[in-house]
Amino acid sequence: MAKGYILVFIKRTRPDGWDEYRRGVTELVAEFGGRYVVQGGTVEVLEGSFDGRQMVVLEFPSMETVRAFWNSPAYGRLKALRSNSGVMDAWAVAGV
Image (cartoon, rainbow, N blue to C red):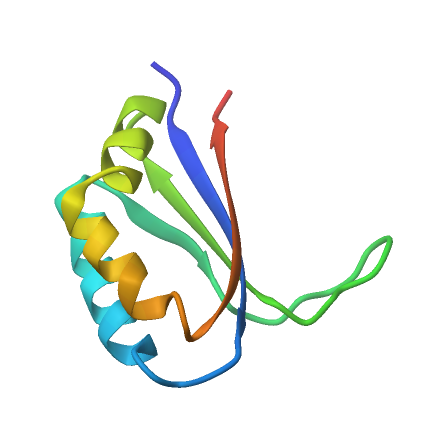
C-alpha cells in the first residue's frame, strides 16, 4: 500500500492560536502514525519562484490514514485554532 502525504503551504498572519495549534497537531500526527518529512527549512529555488510561505510535508501510512486524520473531530478542533491566524493551502498526495 502506498503511503499518503499532506503538503502544506502556510502564511501566518497573526500569532494568536498558532502555538497551541502547532503543539496539538504535532501530537495528533503521531497518533495517526504520521511523521514530519519537511518542516520549514531553507528553500533553494531551482526553477520558478518562491512566494515565502512555510512548507510542511507530512507522511502517513496510507491515503486512508490521511483522510482519517484530516476529517477527525480532533483535527477539526485544531483547525479552528489556526483559522484566524493564517492562510493555508493543503494537498493530499498518494506516494508511489
